[in-house]
Length: 303
Image (tube, rainbow, N blue to C red; front, side):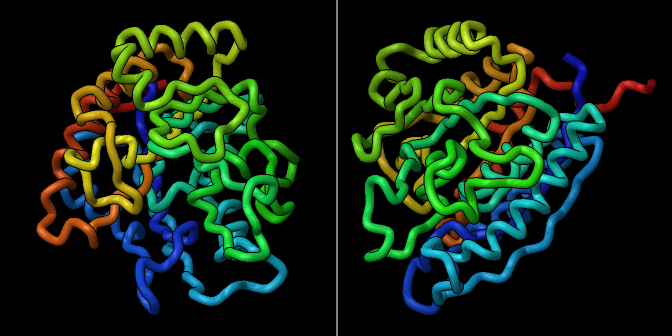
């Protein structure tokens, strides 16, 4: 495999609720924290594209029951452009967020180049939508809805997109790995956190690849919410929990999936440096990502 990496930073927090009144979530700081901890030096990407930090509204925006929904659509389109450009240049986009709502822009960019499946590696299903919760009572947060939105469930604002329409990905082309809850189960192939423990990484990777082959998916996006890690390994996330993966097993799983040649890009989300005041976790996360992406080339091959 000879695909060079392009790092795209998506420093946003639009999909999360305020951790306390008047305070914005800190996930927007993650790209800078990981780059400062050596991510660029370790990966030696062909290019680093830094997107702007979007404004965060504490109050509801007009004509939507999704927090920051209007702003999120605008920046999803921009992220889609960046991901699409990386793929057009035959690079592997590594999108560093940010919260899980970055998945929408990643899939949008990938879909502009054809059909695409999704491996959703996350400690939660992120499948909340108007069909399973009262959107009128509680303002929705896209980071808890990303899989629902990606599969076409929810407001048109975040489910219908120029050129590709809706959904961004079909239910049957999704594999969800790592959910440690029984809340909002999506109608997709699922491997829960307990099943991951029982199956082991090698067995899990084999089963995932068999499913991708069966679906004839040779283009797949990989979504990585770092809360799939056990909270004893990484507590600096929005919703930590257990059981979960440790860093070596996460690196092994991602490397195994990338090594199939079917993964066209990866987004990493939900690390919150404000929950890591001493900077303990950034360097281990960089080590994990560097090991996970070892199947990829570190430099571009001259044409």
